[in-house]
Image (tube, rainbow, N blue to C red; front, side, top):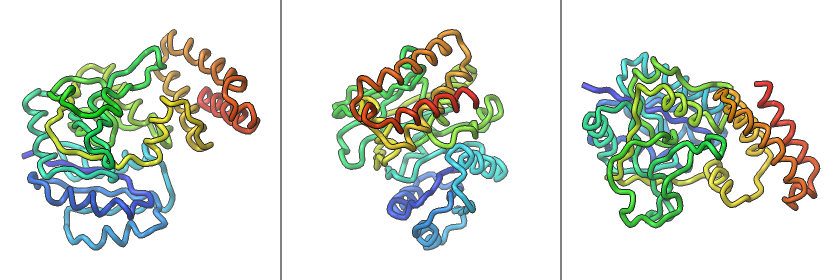
Amino acid sequence: MEKIGLITITYNSADVIRGFLDSILKQSFKNFEIFLIDNDSQDDTEKVVFQYEDDRINFIKNSENIGVAKANNQGIKRALQANCSQVLIINNDIEFEDKLLEKMLCIQKQKKCSLVAPKMMYFDKPDHIWYAGSFFLKRKGYLPIHIGIHQKDEGQYDGIYPVEYAPTCCLLVRKKVFEDVGMMDEKYFVYFDDTDFMYRVFKDGRHKLYFFSDVKFFHKVGSLTKSVENKQKNEFRGDFFIKQNTRNHIYFLKKIGSVYAYIFIVFLFIKNNLRVFTNPKIRCNYRTWKLINQSFFEGIKM
C-alpha cells in the first residue's frame, strides 16, 4: 500500500496551520505522515500544532530560518526514512476537500505518471483560478507561466492533462523522482527552488506531471505568492523579493547553460539598468537600482 509523507514548512503560520491540519486529518486516505518543518517561528505555530494529538504529526523545529529549499529537503529525507513511497510537498496556507490524497493517487495510477498537481483556486475568490497547469516559456527566461491565472472558472480548463510545471503549493511526487533527478537545490533560499526542481524533472524526461481539475482546493495566497503574481503588473516590490528573485533567476539561467540562457542573462542586465529611466520608483531610488545590480552579480557568482 502507498504511504504518503506530507512536507510543509511553517514560519509564523499560527493563523493558517489549524485549517491546514483540519483538512489533512479528515482525508479519506489515511496512510500518511505529516512532517512540519518549522523555520524558527516566533508566533504560536508550535502551540497550535501540539493541540493535535495524532501520532502521524511530526513537528521538527529549526533553530533558525534555513530557507524553503533546505527545509523541504529536510522533510523529504525524513519522509523517505519513514518508508514513504510518495512525497506530497504542500503549503499550509491552503484548505481542501477530504478526498484530495485519494484523487491524486488515483490520477497517478490512471495516467501512470510520477507527479500530480490539482487545480488551485483563490481562497478569497473561490470561483477564480490561481493554477490550472503551467509550462516553461523560453522567451520569458524559462519562467513557468500559470494557465488560467486570475480567470473566472467556467470549466474552461477542466480535465486531466500533462503539464511541465507545478508549484510546490501541492505537488505529489514518487520517491523514484528524487532518486533520478535529486532534491531541491539548497542555494535557493526562497523563490525558484520549485522552478529549478521541476525544470530538471521536465528536461530529464523520465517522469511525467499531470494536472487534474476534479478537486476543491483553495489557496490563501500570501505575500510571497502575491509578489510573484504582481510581476505581471510591473508593480514595485520590497528589497527581499528583488534580491532573491533577481539573484535566483540568474543562477537558474546559469544552470540551464544554453546559449539562449546566457543571452537572456545579458538581456536582463540591460533591461534592469534601463529601468532606471523607465520606472520612476527606481529612478528616484538609487539604493534599489544598486540592489538589483548587486543581486544580479550575486547570481553570476553562485
